[in-house]
Image (cartoon, rainbow, N blue to C red):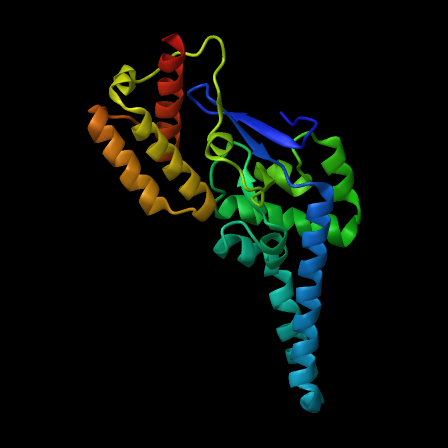
Length: 240
């Protein structure tokens, strides 16, 4: 659900609520404009390089060299730059799945295909759907199951790892009562580090160490597992 301050709350499979800040319409428009300038700069660069050899069949080859990278620009950037294009990086936003996980090739591909349709044939359609949809999604996002979130806000540790526990929350790992407050702070810091840098190795090592400390096994993803541990710890702490 989206709230008035452009935030988006998701519920994990373990009934833990996590809130993200959505990119505003202005931020998404600015990132689009920056990407447009990047694309135009590429075209001008190509034609400047080959301006003295545009005769005959070379014209078509140079035109393809200029246009093809532009056509695939958004897809390749988001795929290889962790959900960001140059514009998104400057505006400090990125693509994320609406379940809070990292998008895959199919998600980026769906966004790209519908993006070509939206921006090239129905200008303004994405903006209309963005305001109609309460999850900060354009048409491509809806079909891809993605949205665009902010990553520019310097949040405190507590804000970044804030978990909303419902009244009927059922803890999964009672062993968390053996953890210290400092242990949980380290887990939170690991989650923050992962969200900021998308460092899967650190996340995996932390999840493995925590599972070993608690002597538990789980089928949850590393991120979900660590979030549940923090949620369980907060639940038991609030019972004291």
